[in-house]
Length: 144
Image (cartoon, rainbow, N blue to C red):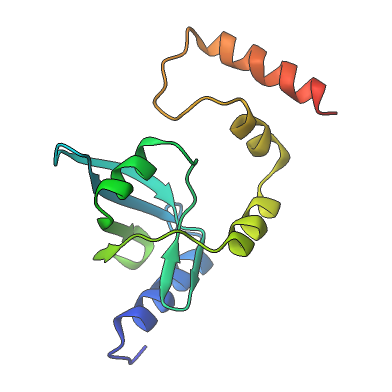
């Protein structure tokens, strides 16, 4: 693709990686800093690209939100092995429109919605995997 617009190039490569079934096409390494200016990096899933903005979804009240509230300057890195390409970008994180969030929520599989409603935060300590499975089954049965 011939373009000098970095966002158009990004979109083209992302779509190409997805069409090639790249196993990590939607994986984004997201770096934030906390209120002590300590870095944190984790993987999020790229959910949308529109109006020149990439979007990922995270649970309200989580550490990512707290870090972004302290400093909305974030850095992202995407690597697409099928294209032998890596893209890094530094940008300002902003909240996504509610209508887009609602649409993305509607696309989530039922089990993923149930896990969300368990109320556990990522990286939260749990007593055991069996405990988590039990809580998941209880909520799944309750929501039938």
